Length: 320
Image 1: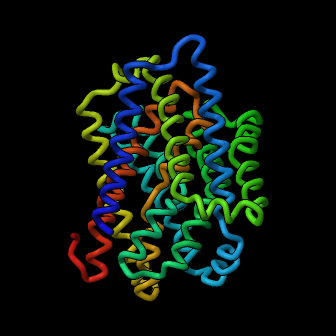
Image 2: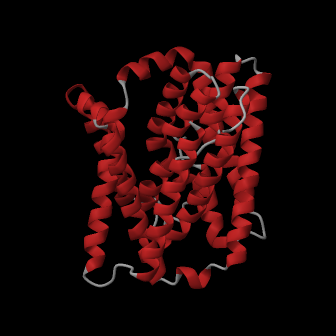
Image 3: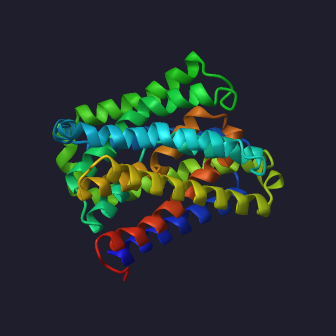
């Protein structure tokens, strides 16, 4: 199980790095810019359509029963994280271009697939993890743009009715349509989970290519020093450690069962790259999306590696 998770981490990390390298060497220019941008927008719509189709209505109903746990996960995701993000983004030694990306990272919903996988490895409450992660992503469609508008209005160029329309058309509407159609397409989605997962990742890579290509054209790598990337990685590591410690301590202090405390640990400490990439493409100017996403990608890899080490220890196993 651990080997398989690390294999996925490595494979997707390699794909992300290869996409960034391609965008650095061959960014879209001239007539290709609107073509790539249009394809990236289509990828965002497809991503959220599939998110909606995957969300079980029964999971929503069942999840409402464990409201205390789900409120704690939402509080960790959309209250604790943003507070730490405000502190981290104000650090004087953090590159100002990364500061906005770090704050944006803390406003994202939790992951779904990896949160459930690590909960299962750690022998936690898997059913509750499915509900908690699903609720987080559903809430993120509304809360992340609202928090970005509240805390990052300047970085997004202000929150206009045009941005609201874009969020509704590219994020919310596809999600609702996918969920409404679930009774008819849910079986197809479940049977074809493997290749639809590749479609998910391919859409993310397409948006990353478009974002980094636009940023490279605007001089991204002339603005970013290797030392700044190292500082960013250390700040992300400190942020991850703080949230992991806080969620575990909170779950135990409030009397959650061990199984539910594991859910809070893994669902409350992660941030979704799958949601972050398309949301950044919608919420930020094209030229700034690439640099905003760098902290998200760094944190994504760190969280997977850290949780892959923690989960088997909680289960009383050593990583294999």
